[in-house]
Amino acid sequence: MTNAHIFFMVFLCQTPMEDIMERKTKLEEIEALRGIAFLAVVLQHAIAGLFVQPDMSPLSVSLGTTFLGLIRFAVPLFVFITGVVLFYNYDRSFQYGRFLKRRGQQVVLPYLFWTVFYYIWVSLRSGDAVFSHWKDLLHVLELALTGKASYHLWFMVMIIPFYLLFPVFRLFLSGKRPAPMNLAVTLAFLAANLFLLEALAKGVFQSDQPILNTLYRFLDRNFLFWTFYFVLGGWVGLYYERWKKAVRSLWGISLALTVLFLIYIGTKIAAINQGAAAGDYLASANVTGPLKPLMLLATLAMLPFLFYAVQRLLTRPTKAGLTLSLIGNYSFGAYLVHAFILRYTNLLALNYLGGLGVYAQTLISFILCACVSVGLCIGYRKMRDRWRKVYVGADRGMAG
Image (cartoon, rainbow, N blue to C red):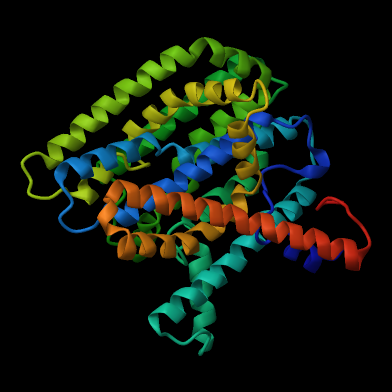
């Protein structure tokens, strides 16, 4: 199978989170969690697009951004899942060259395709010429390196270094070491991550030097600020069965802490909008910014309950569980395309559904975007499989 065949098979919808050739027992909870994370991302972006309407009441903004804080776990959960799957599947030795090649085909190539897609789409919307000068190629390269082709592609710039540096992380965490030592390493990464986030909050990362200033402008997509979630996922991947048992005991504490964090967040946001003529969305949403120590701790508190809830949901086949797993299976491609779809579902909500109110607008736009994004991926995969059966004469998995 040529690299071109592999590229067209994965650029839209293939989930790149595990190596199919070396996969062990499938982690059912992880597939459903991936679906939850995708839905949370789409809902976050729907809220961000619709709660900035003028003259929004302080109460509406406060409620919307407090709920936004509840679903901010999405990106940390994706990073956590990446750590879980990599350390679970590669707990023994592995071939780094083969690993990088597969990740390049499954992650980097799709990212580059969608970088070009969003560059062309944005250029056409703004009336700019597409690739009219050789400097446009440099611009696309800059977009690829920074994730600025679309607001959601920063995630790709952040996640790719974890694949590149996976052997380094395996030096810190190893199934060959005692579990307490691996736990100590994980806690050390937590402390280091909190230190970095606290320094970021205090404005330490500022400089008049051009190079440093450029680096500091993109700290939100610097993998160092997300490292703890990956290492925590790695620790869980090494002791997956123990983790599943542990969350059955911890879920109650986790739920209680989540409620307390939510109350605290809601109180802070309400104070921002108190007495105002209109709600301040940007200031309210900033309370739950993902790179804040508060949100790291809140996400950490929520994880056991979230995992336990999925465990319970999957104890027997249900429509909800099967739907989440289906969404999780197509979440990578759906994530890449959803910003394009959301642009039009939000416009539909703003232009034709204004009488329903912002909550209904957000819900409808969210559902439409999620369904269309996943539906496109399902349709693409069916078309791909049909083409392979007719023209290739084989019906094998992607890495076959």
